[in-house]
Image (cartoon, rainbow over all chains, first blue to last red):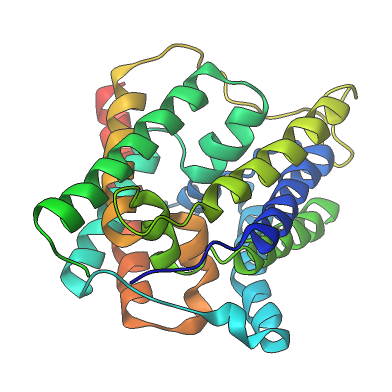
Length: 145
Length: 139
């Protein structure tokens, strides 16, 4: 499955993500790391500061629907894997981002923006792992076309 | 209350940004990671836009003594490169390449209700808990 290069929406969307990260730091003093915000909700008893975390997730879940209702072509959705692989992928993403203290947002956006050595290295590592994984799946095993 | 309303707004902006940028489509992520195939570099510009705005905004923000709705900035304190960081990032990257989802886009794509998305989110939550337990066991 191929997708088109969409530079302008990519930059605009990226800027919105950046704005969200800046406002969350300016007002709440918090890093906009999705795995961290979500992970702290998934324990018992929940983190004492669960209300803002839940509110963030609620906004994250609800806004895309509102956007797509006005711009239906933004709902484009394509998968490269079936359910068993998606189940494995979800576990690895959850485990890895929790064990490695961050994901694309916490390390890749917020961490790099404040020039954290750990986040820069983590981003290089997960990008490389992702590139190698797709290379093996698509060009060595030859699946997912 | 201010913190909760602000978090809701930031979550909405974040989710809106992911949607506008096309990142809620896993095929687009995998196309970015497929440099040997029909490469779609869009994700680089999403990162560039997000990191650029955040870097500038953080600089201005950190000039303040404290956040507007809180008495301090909560920033990660770890500074050392350790095995946990590298192992976690590598495992995360493999999952990202396999499924084309990371946590933000998977949550932002929940409204579409695809079985693939729901499955990914369910096991992601299990993984988040398992990763925390593994972290507690190794530190």
